[in-house]
Length: 129
Image 1: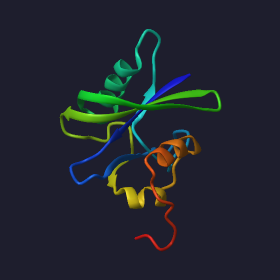
Image 2: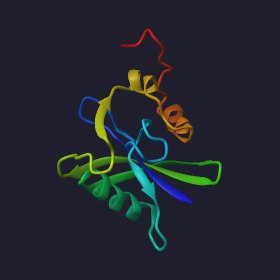
Image 3: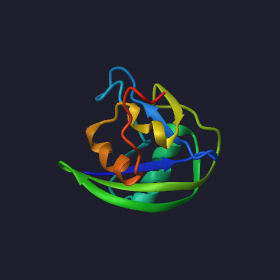
């Protein structure tokens, strides 16, 4: 199964995260927005559709960042450079911005570790606030 993931930064350089809602698999985990590529879609088309469904935004420009596999999933990660619309938590329980220094203080699904490593997010323990 192919999955698209969006890395979105605000002007301050913080990353957008969504909290998986109660009742869904991996409830309570933070993640980068994205979702499944449907049959007949390109990864870019899926990215645009997923971000409109999940966040209420329209992607205007995105750049392919990297690909990786985790178990039976193939991930296509994109940097969203420009979008229109106001971010809304249409699927996530809530959205938040996190600095690179504080990304790893959030609990992510194991499949997101590759993204954190690629972003070179430092490991953050009790000393981070």
